[in-house]
Length: 215
Image (cartoon, rainbow, N blue to C red; front, top):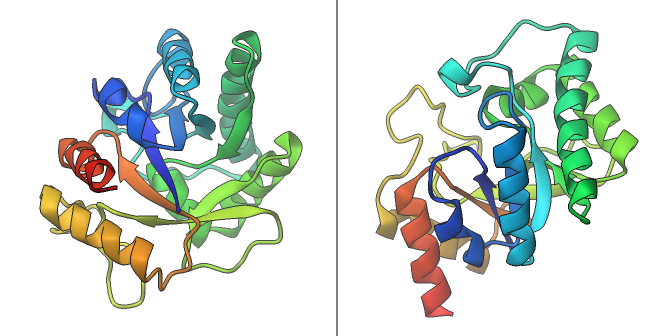
């Protein structure tokens, strides 16, 4: 199972997590980061042989892109495309390419819940001819996707994520993250293609190091 992580969000953890991941979802300047930091993150990913995924989010750095916004189809499409295009331009300048797209935070959840948001992500992925990273429990896709599970997020009985507003949404215990990661990789009931660790969660970085050492 491929390991992916949300990076480039100016948390200071990227150098620690990069040696242990296969795909880096790089923030595209709206919920976090800026073009200069995006370029630095792309260079770091290249140096470790990490595949680069665009990580667009709502333009709301104050709330880290974790609050849904009432945008129509055209507004959402412009929001997403501008971010993906910016990262693609940086990748081209540095001699690499985009591997995938994974929306961030509220945009990720709205992609599942709102038809018009989902269509903007589908259209953008088709434009750049790359897959979307999507939740493993959903089967609503007519385009190539990479299905993911989360090592450091809480799940409820129907297989969906515990909302960030609730206790237990994000695991902060290294051992708990390791245990869930092993469950997904050994049993994989969700039939995921990739396992996500959040780069802004220090416990996730430590858990990845533990798992890597165990292998």
